Image (cartoon, rainbow, N blue to C red; front, side, top):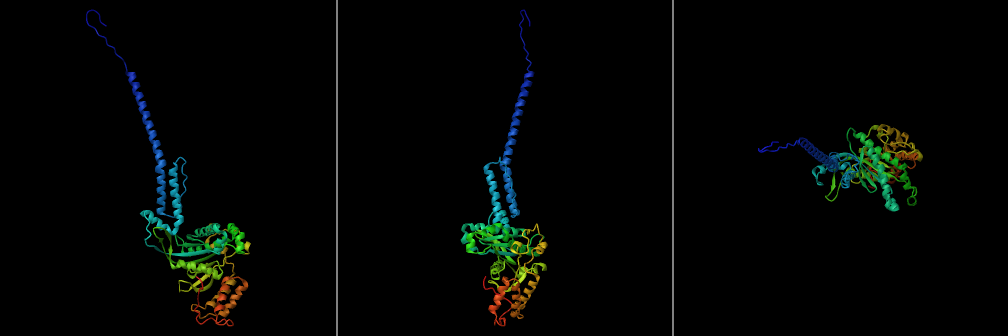
Length: 439
């Protein structure tokens, strides 16, 4: 400060460094918090997008990709998070259900169709089929019309119980169901992987033998058969199947139009398996095999089968040898098979199966039967046939098994078609085979 007459001034200095530092730190903190909140919000938003959109879309894409690569591969079940929106869960579950339904509907025959159309994005029902060699099985529920009239709408439960037994046995033995046709089932076995044609053929026969045995002890089927309305209509009725097996070529293809297609097989050999099934009624047996099917199996299994006739069937002029397998019964029904036997492939190997589940007919019976067949057929041209001798052998067989269907059928035929019943002379036009009188 100055005094006197001279002019003077004042100067005030303020030290704001602390405030500036504090303000800068506060701004940094605010900006840091803002950035952190923005980062957390972004991360949370990304997590929601991943959970609600990305992950479901990836899973759906995986389902589609799996179906396009291998249409028969079982779709893995995924537990969807509860936090996922209801709409997204519904879409993903619907896609999984659709894929599973597609597999059930098309089966193995439709695998190629699913692959092609999922890759190309359209259904082409006009494309050519694929030639395959396979074993075709056809089986039919006996007395189904009577069961339907007695059970009405409940007959569906009976059919589906039989279908469960049939399908399980077939899939367990390297085959697959192709069609469910009311009371009948079309089944297919194709060589695949390391399995040989012999193994596939024996597995097909094993399937039928197991089905017939399982049906005799299934509690649900026994309950259905015991119903009053069924027994009143068909006293003593039990649920039975007739089964045919044949080997040959077929065209694996999509059949239909843009309105409806089915994945199946076109071939006279498929029809022959149906003819064989129908013929089981004439011979009183549950299983009939063609000579082509019989020829695929090992000598050990061939020896267990029984040649029962040589015939021509409707739709074919070529004579066909017919064989059957004398399926044994469980001990509870007077048979030789343990009531508790486990017939699954995981319990009995293919080799052990034929040791455990042997025909109910003895080797002595089958030897007598062979002589009856030799005398009946008389070689490839029938010239060596001796029907009188055949009758003697057939009567010996009937003495052991009075209800043997093949023996009754063949004996009836030679008695009704011989020149003279006293001598049982074969007709002059006998050529070693006969036409079946029914399909």
